[in-house]
Image 1 (cartoon, one colour):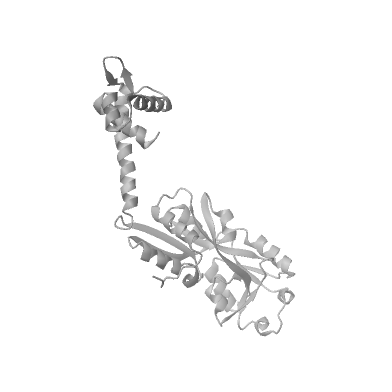
Image 2 (cartoon, one colour):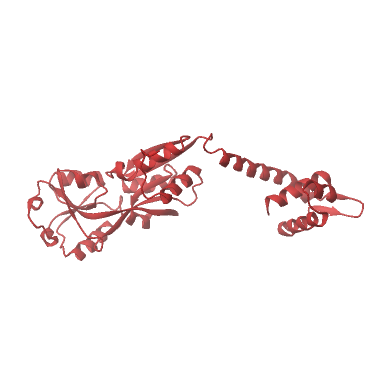
Length: 302
């Protein structure tokens, strides 16, 4: 069913005359007749009773007149809204970011650029743990989230884009004995305590940690489980162990910590932007399209 077919149908329902409808649309009577027949064929029922003396609506046609008027108005309203997108129509966009992630690098520049381009969209940003991001995205409390690529296997019914590659590595306190060692090697970490978020926050991390450490030639000692990423950082700073993290964290560049990078061959990782497949918020489509169009956005550019 096309918009033109709907318009032809509504015109014919008004005029009840093929010739008048053809003149209204600057076409021929056989063309109108053919389009109406195709519409009836698609719907599976007759819209008009045709005879040599008259044209009149069937009862199915009478019902469809009102429905088609509503459909046409909805389509035209949508076109008007799109055309006036930059002028009116306030929208909200709720963004979630993994706690600890450096927003100045991974979220704030694009959000600020987007806000300058679409001032009618109100953006809110909140930091959450892995589990909270999943739950709030599922419940519609967040429109899109920035998280790490291994989380996508636990996000349901989503679309996601690889947003930015990051480097995985081992984060420890600057006061840890290994932090000051010259020519530090992966095998130096053998037997150390590694800190992980528990399964309720980030499932599958134990197996992932063991696989990556095995590739690096590191034998894991004890594993300490804590509720979330903020707790991981607290325990690292307290000297209770170290963690497999990445350089999307502010702490990777903080002098109170020491970050030992691992190669991407050992631990490939990236920040992803994810949103629910059924989210029809137009601001989500605008924002994610903008992310794909520009690899780097300078918010201070004109």
